[in-house]
Length: 76
Figure 1: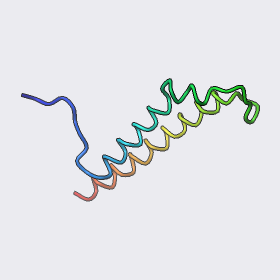
Figure 2: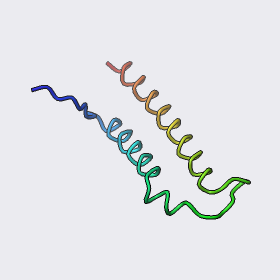
Figure 3: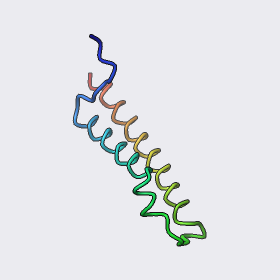
Figure 4: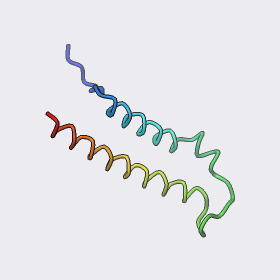
């Protein structure tokens, strides 16, 4: 039987998986409910600032993941 889910095999892979899971959790309803307040930060509603933070954090985690994958490919 084939397994269609690929799991990480290294500590770096598990760390990146955990980072993405945290980012996904930061964008679902219970957390959004805590963040959704009538506050203005830098001229934007807090929820918009939170969305920007999540997007930039995803980009950062993907960039780190690319660097780690690039290093592990060179190690082999």
